[in-house]
Length: 152
Image: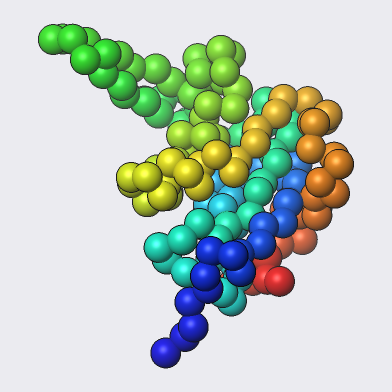
């Protein structure tokens, strides 16, 4: 049986990912593992033991196949007949970070813990971000092997 950490034993670090030419779904799986803390040996399922992730250049992320035009996102306004639909193409024009945020959100647990973990994701267009003082570790997606994702 593994030992679970207490709240005061948790420590978070920061990671930086450049989303240029990255596929949105594959990027979201890497980010969700880091945010949940599954890349750590001290992973505790009921606690927020994850790390912060800063994603830059999100406007240059890609979709495979024809998903950019054909994929549909649905939401409901709460009124009768109030279903709204949009595509990633339209969403990237309005809010470029929302596509990745939705992908990561759907990979996190539902409820209070998942909402808290989603706040550890910081998405920015362009190369600059205000988190350089945290000295984030840079993750190079080109050098990642699918089997070995970010080990401490």
